[in-house]
Length: 352
Image (tube, rainbow, N blue to C red; front, side, top):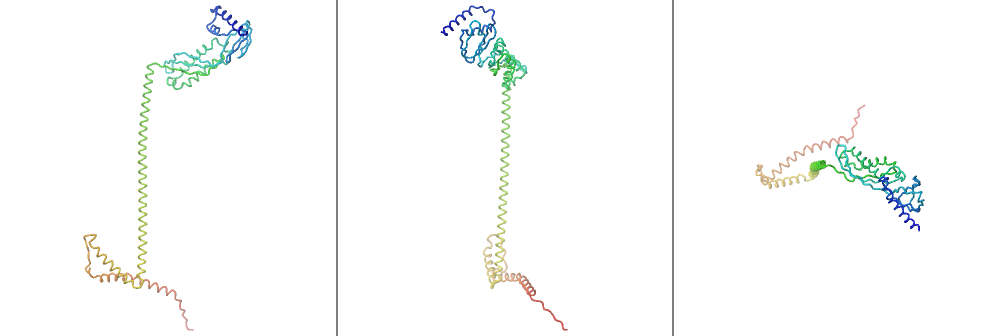
C-alpha cells in the first residue's frame, strides 16, 4: 500500500512540475528541481546522501540515511547533497608563466561536501563556484613560476592550489581533497626550443660522462703502473736482501770451515811425525799443480828445477820451519814466565 501511495504521489508531483512555469527559476534551481525526489510522506534516504528539508520555505532539518517521515504539504525536499567524493573536470584554460610563456593547462579537482547546510545555502552552485575558483587559483599560481619550474614542481603547484581553494571554500562546507594537472600544452616554438635544450643537455651529459670515463681509465692505468713498479722494486729489494744474506752466510760458513781446517792442521802438525805428513801433503799438491798446467791458460811459468821434487818439498818445509820458530820461541818464553811466577820467593838472612 505504501508503495502504491509513493508511486501515485510521485506521478502527481511530476505532472505538476511539468506544467509549472520555469521562467522565474535560475539554471541552478532548475537543475536541482529536476533531480529532487518527491515527498510521499514515507521516504528512504540512501547511504552517503543528505536531503535538506524546508518547512514552509524555511530550513527545517537534514534527513539521515534510512527511513524518514515527512508532511507532504508543509515539508519540501529542497536540496539533495551527495557526501561521496566528487570529481570535477576543470576545462582547459590559458595562463601566463613568470617568464611570459602562454600555457594551455587543464586539471581534475577532487572534493567532498562536509556540511550539507553550508553547501546548500552558502553558495548558489557549489560545483560551478569551485570550478571557477580552481581556474583562477591555477592562473595565479602559474604566474608565480617559470616554465621550467612548472614542469619540475607540479606536486608543489597542486598542493598550493588545494590550499588556496580550501581557504575560500570553507564557508561553503566543501573540502578540496586534491588537485591534479592533466595536461600542459606549450606553444610550438617554445616546444622546439625546449627540445633543442634537452638535446644539448643530453650531449653535454654524454661528453661529461665520456671525459669522466677517460679520466677514470687513465687514473686506473697510472695506479696499476705505480703498484706494479712498487711491487717490482719490493721484489728486487727482497731478492737482493736474500742474496746478500745468503752470501754472508756462505762467507761465514767458509771462514768457519777454514778456521776449523787450520786448527785441525795445526793440531796435526804439533803431533809426532807431523813434519813428515806436511812434506807428503806439499809433494802431493806440487804434483797436482803440475798436472793442471796449461789447462786454464796458454801462459805457463815454470821453475828452473821442475824435475827436482825433493828440493821443492825441502824448500817448502824450510819456509814452514822458519815461520814456526817465532811461535815456538814465544811459547817457550810464556812457559818460563809462568814457571817463574809459580816459584815461591826465597828469603835471605843476614848475619848478626
